[in-house]
Length: 362
Image (cartoon, rainbow, N blue to C red; front, side):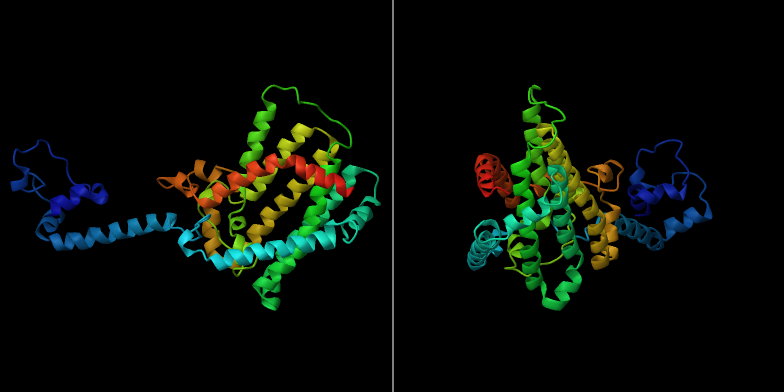
């Protein structure tokens, strides 16, 4: 019995047992220490197999516990979607809320005859005649509002509740986001042309692919549509699987890819200004996001942070992140199928988006 434990256990090499000089024909019938003179310690081990177990098994348990502790998930499984847990009533509420929000947004902000969007763009544009400056100001205003409200989330939720704060957050952020996007679409070819690369073979296909990939780097909370619309109670999640294994801040990485691709293709000063502003906002979001998660989750976030990276694949390459067997299955989920369809739909809808933006004259 002692022989089998020693030969099968990885710690057996630490006992420094003497190596045999030859193999015996019937090792199962004789001592596993062969025909050498035994030391008192060896004889003690052979005559006391139960004591040997007590010596080795705690080491085994301790080693296995330490290994499991290193790679045990403390965060949530991202992009998880269980169809059996979905309620038809919840999605009916979501559809109704989405319709109401879009109607209010159109009347209160987008429609030039009733909304404040045109006046807001006019006020910002009056600061400078430079479209680059206006683009940067619009991005700055959106960034301050968006990140500022996100930083006040803990306090706000305590004062008015999770759902009410989500409505406030979306109601204030969404108009500024729409204004920034519409201004960019309408003025993307203004400014100084810095380069023109449309004739480079294969460049359009390469940049299109980069843009397509960038939408798969959405932060996993974006998939929780019922929480986004406050149908379900919104939560601050600590994600750890899926895209989070590659980068802890996929939204930032995706935005950088999108900005670089568009700046290369458009090639003028307005596109560069818009890209610089958006990238700066998301880089601030990296610091601010880690800070907020650290406050909310403490040691659990520190554990996730220690085995993930901001720059894609760094934690994997240096061994801090171990991809599980069948890792690709963490992407074979309904939210990623939905992202694929919506991304293709957004690309095909570019002419409609451009025409709608042009009619606003922002």
